Image (cartoon, rainbow, N blue to C red; front, top):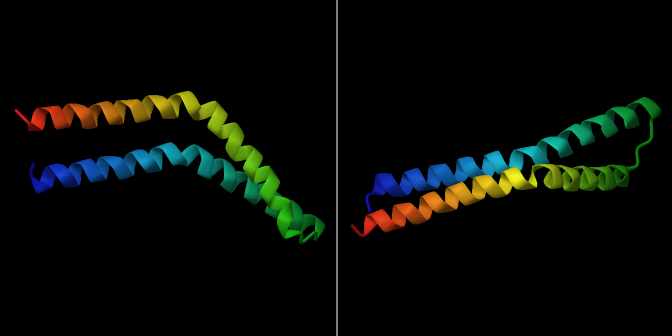
Length: 89
């Protein structure tokens, strides 16, 4: 196992984590922005008002993107196991 191989696995892992977390993070960002605009327009400064919609948005995006997330994770994990099998030969 070369250092380049280990760095490549680490790079792919970070890319996969960023790719899989993007839908949830983007939904929380958009919902937070919409609520912030609403709060600025109505001058309501309630800090707890943003938590529930963000949590619901993240859960909805997790439900919508769940099958895709699982598929990407399975592909990445298979690649890791196939790489481990090739190291021994």
